[in-house]
Each structure stands twice: as C-alpha cells, then as structure tokens.
Image (cartoon, rainbow, N blue to C red; front, top):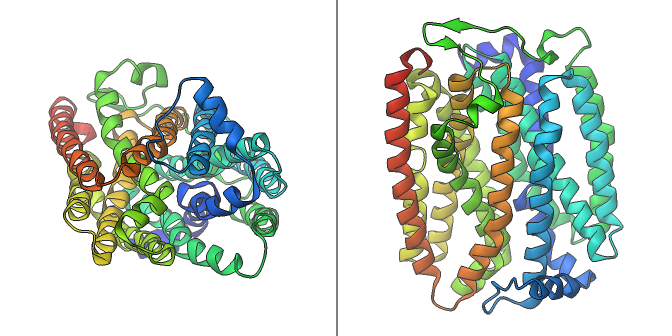
Amino acid sequence: MQYLQLLRQYPRHIGYGLLHYFFSGPGQSFFIALYIPSFLATLDLMPVLDLGLALGLDLGGSHEPEHLAFDWLYAGATLLSGLTLPWVGHWLDRLRLRYFSLALGLAYSLFCILIAFAGQPWMLFLAIFGLRLCGQGLMGLTASTATARFFEEGRGQALSLVSFGVSIAEIVLPLLVVALLRGISWQTSWLLIAASLLLVFIPLVIWLIPLDSPFQLPGTAEIQTAAGPVSVSRGQVLRRPSFYLLTSVYLFVPFFITGIVINKDLLGAANGWSSDWLAVGLSLFGATRLLANLFSGPLIDAFGATRVFSFMLIPQLLAVLVLALSNHPMAMIAFFLLSGVSASLNGLASTATWAELYGPRHLGAIRSMISTFMVFSTAVAPILLGWALSRPGQEAATMLTAAAVIGLLTALAFWQTRRLRLIHPQRS
C-alpha cells in the first residue's frame, strides 16, 4: 500500500496519529530546553541542588550550579513520569481511543497552565512531570500504538505518515518559541499552548474519531500463525532476554539526543556556537527526520522492521564521529542531520518491530513499558552528558565513547534480529 492510497482510504486515521505526534512537542526535551534560560532567570532552583547534594548526588563537574539544579529537577520529574506511564498506558488496550485522547488533552492543558504559574521549584517539578507524562509519554504512545495496531498492511508507511507530526513540531516549534519570547513572556506562551490543546486538539479528536469508528476499539482478535499466537502479553515479553537486548538498542537515540539537546548550551559554549545557530540545528534535525520518514516507511514494508532495526544506529555513529573530529559550525549541522536520519529509523522500525514480534492485542501495555524505559533513560541523560560536557576539553572523548557504544549496540541488534528471524520467519 502506497502513501497516497493510505491517505485516500484512511485520512482520519492518519490525521489522528499525526495530531497526537505534533502535540507531543511541548512535552519533548527539545521544546522544554528552549525555556531553560527563562526558568533559571525567574525561579530560584538552588534548593533542588541543595537537596541533591544532601543525598550525595554530585555529577556537576564545572557545570553551572543553576543549570545543574534544573538538570536534577528535570531528571526527577522525568523519572516519576516514567514510573507513572505503565499505569496509565495500559488503558490504551481497554478504552476507546476517543475517550482516552479527550482525557489526555484535558490533563495536558492543565499542566501547561500550571507551568505558566509556577513560582516555586515544586510547582515547576510537578508541571514538568505532567508535560513529560502527557507529551513525551502518552501523546506519542497513543499515536504509534493506535497506528501500529490498526494497520497491518502498509504499517511502516502508516507509521511514517503519522510521525510527520513530531517532525513538523521539531521544525516549527523552536522557531515559533524564539519568536514568541521576543514579544511576550514565557508564562503567556504556555497559556497559549494550553489554549491550543483545548481549542484545537480536543475538537479535532472529536471530529477525526466518530464514536462508531472501529479504529478506536482495542484489538481483541488473537491471530494464529505456524509459530503460535501472534499477540504476546506484557508479562510474557518481560520474561524474554531478547526483549531487553532490543530495547537497549532502541533506547540509545532518545537517550543521547535528549542529553545533547538539554545541554546544548554547554556544547555550544565549548565549540563557540550561538544559541540561534543551535536552534537552527534543532529545526534541521526535525526537517531531516521528516524527509527520512518518507524513505523509512517503505524500507520497513519492503525488508521487514527487524532488518531495518539492525542498522538504524549507523547514521548516529557517523554523527558522533563528525562531532568528535571537528568543532566547525557545519559539524554541528552535520550532527543534527545524521541524527535526524537515525531518529526516523529508530522511531518507526522499533514500533513496527514490537508489532511484528509481539502482535497487536497487548501493544499498548508493552509499548508503555518500553516508553517507561525510554523515559528513565532520558531522565538520566541530561545529568550524565551534562557532567561529561562540562569538563573542559572532554567533548571529543565523550563523542568517541558514544561511538564505541553505538558500535556495540549495532552488533547486538544485528545478532539478535537475525536470530529472531531464524526462529520465527513468519513474523519477520
């Protein structure tokens, strides 16, 4: 099934996923990172750092104390959202999508309002927890799970189309925020985001998904193959060692990109790159991921998700090597361009791989657990990479270490996906 055919036959289904991916933007690291200078200028976050030091947590190096305090607050809020995600995410397998999305939109808007009025560190913590849970966690989880569950034929291309939403957000939102913050306060900008959820997202959900649409019903059919039942429960998946190996491969891109984005000012200061130039790099990252999606979906449908999964980290390997070898501004551009390719392959191939290996029935519960692992990794990333990048002259060593890790993970991915294809050829 081709892109145009999918759009003609299932415009509302594709629109539903694309809408959720786009509105995941305010909860993503790239978006929140744009507000870090505003948070630091407005709020006294030193009590957060004092609490961390009292607990014996000190990975700051020469990191600015205020920025380190935000890293700890961000990490704690993200970890808490990760712990909460499986408890909420499994309802995707039980509720109609329309009801789930409406509740999600309302909760998301409340957290946007909360961050606009945050005057204390605990309020900022709670707001970021909600933004990470609703935005990074549940919006993307809803879009990808609903799409992978509904589409069997053309799954890769359907996932590719809906994931344009997050790519568009990565292109548009950084430039929009920069423009907004020149004319209005950062608090007002968050109130505008809340208004867009209430006045745009929720009405579109109601219009896109009628009450009688089979798209919004969780899958209950148990499809049989020669290898046995396609659908596997979350408990069964968690007892498979291969699951943890594949998940560790999937986690690297969100872990590394989150750590770089949150600490982009440290990376920029070390290499002489301006904040505006870094914002351009972030937008190019989103644009590249969008263009790469056009090719990633057909690759998955043509060769199978597990085969694409095995080499998806290679562009990221090239990206970190470029950054290790040069501090020229164009090296930063090359880094974000290559990272965008890996991010595209990583997001689409992993979702399709879980659907291929574990089936549609429990996909929401399984992907919510995977998303929890991802949230944990992105919580730790700002602290670890902030510590590494804050040490003078260690940027190249950090990138070379990342390259070695990517090489190991790529070898693991190739070995494990090849083994699974031999065991279950019907699912590959």
